[in-house]
Structures are given as structure tokens and as C-alpha cells.
Length: 140
Image 1 (cartoon, helix red, strand yellow):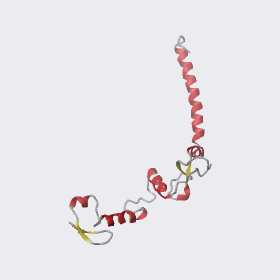
Image 2 (cartoon, one colour):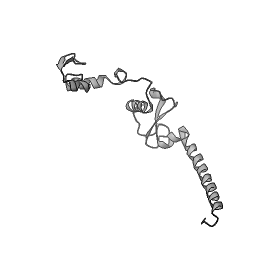
Image 3 (cartoon, helix red, strand yellow):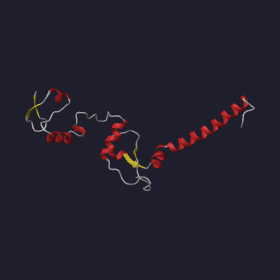
Image 4 (spheres, one colour):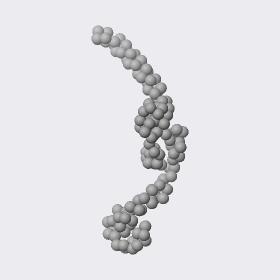
């Protein structure tokens, strides 16, 4: 099978099995250029804003440089890529690198953990009282 290289337009022979594996370049040099050129909006796999949670995170992680310290407290190492507006857009200014503590505080998850821990403690106490009413001779 003879096809044209997508980079240099040179005609070359390719086995049908390689064509099925999406080989479209005449050499490894042209293949490397194709991989570099077809990144982002030029890629045939580009989905635009119709991309999922993991895809947006991967895109931002690739383009937004990770600082050494958290952008909020400047004390601990930054681990999490946090979205500011909660809309998960491809806008790099809508993202920040935070330490886990700052990320959980900003999302309000610290308060949820505290509320759930208190609620869970109370529920355990209520369950214990019910159990001892049922079986009064059990150990307390």
C-alpha cells in the first residue's frame, strides 16, 4: 500500500497492518514531528470544552507549571491542582496549585469532615444505648 507522509508529503510503502495501527509518516523523524505538531487544538482527538474531569486536569497539569510551595499559604509543598470557579474550564488562570490542607479548606471539605465526625460519634453513642437496652447484661 502506498500513501503520502503527513509531514513531508513523500510517497512511501506501508504494510496494511501498519496502516491499521495509524502509521502515517515515512520515518521516525517525521513521526516525532507529527507528535509535536499535533498537540492541543491541532490534534484530531481534541475535544475542546467537551472534555471530562480527568482530561481537564491532565491538560492544566501539562501547561501550568507546578510551584514548589502552595500558592495560598506559601508554607507547604503544593500537591493538588485546585479549580477556583468549580466550572472546570481550560482557562489556566482558573486553576491554582495548593497544599492538601488549603485545598480542603477552600473547598469546604474540612468543615464537612468535622460535621460528619461529630454526627458519627453521636450515632455510635445512640447505637450503643439501643444495644444495651436490648441486652442489659452485656459489658459496657
